[in-house]
Image (cartoon, rainbow, N blue to C red; front, side, top):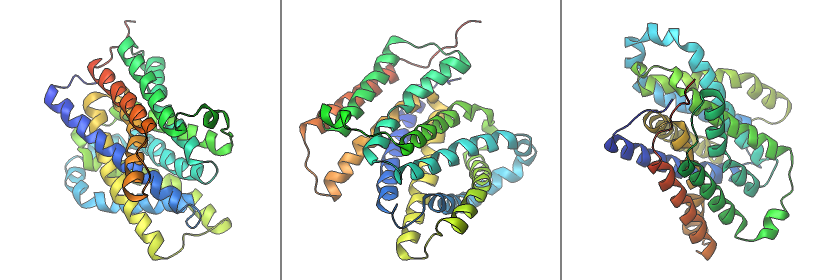
Length: 306
């Protein structure tokens, strides 16, 4: 499953995945900030449409050159679009039905899900350093989200939104673990354009249902700004980093960088929302970084012998 990258390419992957976590932290802030005025499926639909249009001019050369190859792998692109577009849409839906703290905690389960599915489906071995890295990352996120207060954790009220968020995490894990189905020869832009289009087409019926029966996306500066910001930060830059990072170091290690989302979320809140830097921020962030270091040093996982 995982590649065997050199130190330079691994360093580039770590940088790309770190930036991806930063962009995804912005996604949570924007999504939660507009959830009362912009319906989640409509927000997701138009951000993916905008993202696909941004990808298009960069994707055209590769698509023309490798059209027979792309046509041969449209099924894989559709599967990846289902996982990625579906997962990002479910996150926005979850944010309208549960608290952000719940979604953030469930988000921290994704590395565990990715490693578990890699073991279950692809028979990858679980090394002790990797297991410890996953555990430290989860503990770090839990400390930051609960403010190191056990009462906050005990008072969490599970709702339908929490289960929707869990489904989203399964989708992201599925995307990472099936990314190898698209050949590298397609190029990153052609691949992401195909994934975006396939996923958006599958989302269209749900968007029409929401528009006709629940709420349409309002035409306003707020909605256009939110759609454009999500399209650029998450759909384009976030997916470029996530795709490249997974290709280079593999899904098991790449998934660990998801735990940086609450770290960057806290930093953004301190900068833009005048929140204070407290001890639990430092403790939780330190554990997350320690988990990343352990996972990185563990190297690429091996498949078990048949």
